[in-house]
Length: 145
Image 1 (cartoon, rainbow, N blue to C red):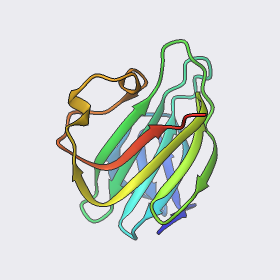
Image 2 (cartoon, helix red, strand yellow):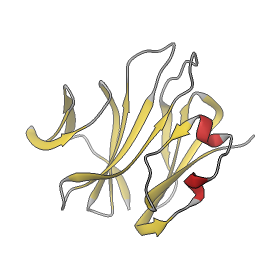
Image 3 (cartoon, rainbow, N blue to C red):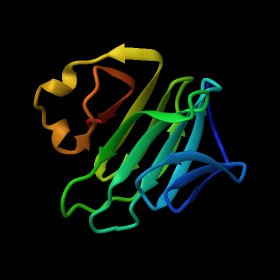
Image 4 (cartoon, one colour):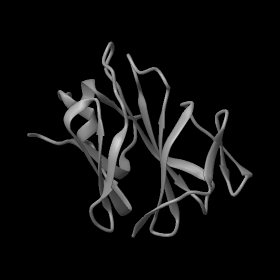
């Protein structure tokens, strides 16, 4: 189940929950949204506050381990982006608008899934950057129109 959180804030690059420093550090200067997933994970959306070359940082924080377990970055050089229209579609799927016409869909997994897809080049990899990992806790895809 996904639900919006209002008790998560960003203080410089530190994530705070109920005003208490979580000791988790992130990139980005503006917290766009925070969502609770499966009563354990917090999905964070942050931007750089640079509207003419914006970057969207997506983090999944494990509150039991108190660390980031998965992340993605959406950006394209010289492309403006505004994070809008966050919609919860199901217990593990959301959509949002950012930079791309048609927006994005993000699916969260209850358990990490093995992934080697990132080892192969694709058009999406020019816009979505993810660190090397053999497993993923979420998948983000561009919606087609």
